[in-house]
Image (tube, rainbow, N blue to C red; front, side, top):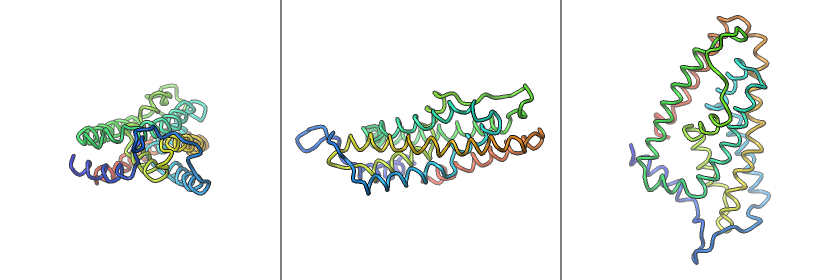
Length: 231
C-alpha cells in the first residue's frame, strides 16, 4: 500500500518544479501567471470547491443543525485552512511525503478513521432547537486542521500545485494558487451552509432531522470511497 501511495504521489510531485533554479536561487519572481492560466485555475477552484465532498457535506449538516451564523467559523476554517495547506504542500511538504510514503499512507487512513467518527457524530446530532444538542459546530481551528486529514483536500491541493504553478516563478505562483482558492472556496462552501440553513424550516420534525443527519453521515462515509480504492 505504501509503495502504491509512493508511486502515485511521486507521479504528481514529479510535475512540480524545484523551489530553486540550477544555481540555487530561490524562485520568487512576479508576475508568475498569465491571465489564461489564472482563469483556468479559477475554474478548477470553483468546480472542486462547490462539488460534493466531506467539507460541503459537513457544512450542509452544520447549516441544518446550527444555522448559518454559528457555522461561519467552520466555513472560514475550511477556506483559509485549505489555502494555507496548498501553500505549505507546494513549498515542500509534498516532497517530504514523497520521501516517506508510509507517513503519507498513515495520514490518509488516520483521516479516514477520523471522518468515520465525524459521521457517527453527525448521525447522532440532536433535533434542531431542542436545547439538547449533542454536538457543537466546528471551530475555526478544528475546520482548518480537518483539511490535513481530508482525502479530497489532498487531491485538490496536489493537483492544483502540479497543474497551475509556473516553473520560473514557482514560489509566487504557489502563493497565488492558495489565494485563488481562498477567494473562491469560501463563497462556494458558504452556498452549502446557506442551503442547509434554508432547510431548517422544513426539518422541524425531530424524526425528519434524525433521518437527514443519518443520510448526511452515510454520504460522508461514501465520500471515503476514493481513499479505499487508493485514488
